[in-house]
Image 1 (spheres, one colour):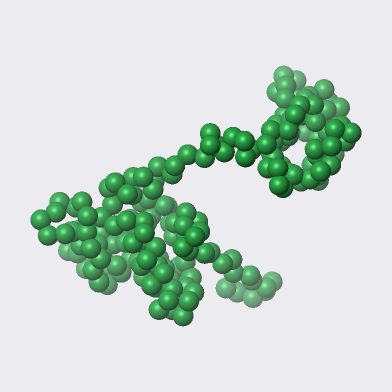
Image 2: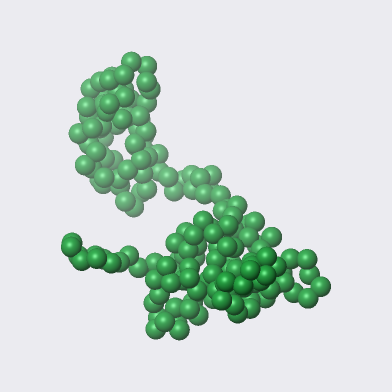
Length: 187
């Protein structure tokens, strides 16, 4: 923001999305460079100093993002596609992961979840051409099974990119705990 304030005709109005007052010096310097500054923030997480007109850090009214969430947040197309085209529902995938975590004593690493999901082979229902299926066991190494059936990890990767984005899509069912690593201690 501040760098481009010195570039002629780079922009007219800087819109800073933050609630952190640590940006106040940059906002002030940007205004000193002749650019207008607008603040976009969430009401409940915006520092009062940014909202206070006497701070002289912005030129325009604050844009409160929660007023526009219905325009900003749209359904995740991957979830809609998964529900339409996958042989397994997102709820069933979450159920499998919860079962894996329970079998591991309540928690399981995302890497281990990936390994276990790769072993879960999705078998088409009898008389089905791939629309709907059931979960079958497997070691994930059977080449014939791999050609005829999909493993659950491939479905997760296709629709969510990986295990972590899947977990982030279902925070009410699954929780991701960040591993805290001490300096010098390998994972």
